[in-house]
Amino acid sequence: MLSGLIKLLKRPSATYKCLVQVIGITALALGLISVGTCSGEVTSSLLQTLIERSEVELKDTHARYIALALALVYLGKAKLCTAAHAISLSWMFYPY
Image (cartoon, rainbow, N blue to C red):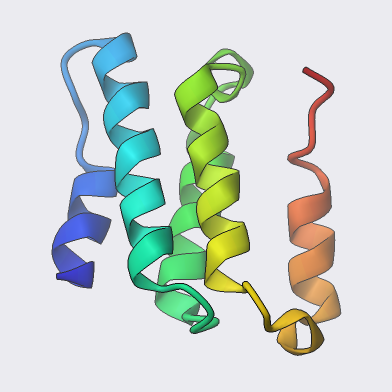
């Protein structure tokens, strides 16, 4: 199931609005499935998605679900988060 959702996360879509909604909901589904697992595969897919999106896309309401999904993957596992993860995530907190 995870591999199918990861493929959906990376699949291009026809329209911008549809793309952001699909990516956001797919990311949230990945986060909910992977709660507290510290899954490297899910984390790398979500980070790659964040890096590939434009600033306009990241300001969309549905794009916030990507950050929520990352938080869910590490829920209750704060001690296992490495400094690299903390640094790589620090850039994505935009003032809304």
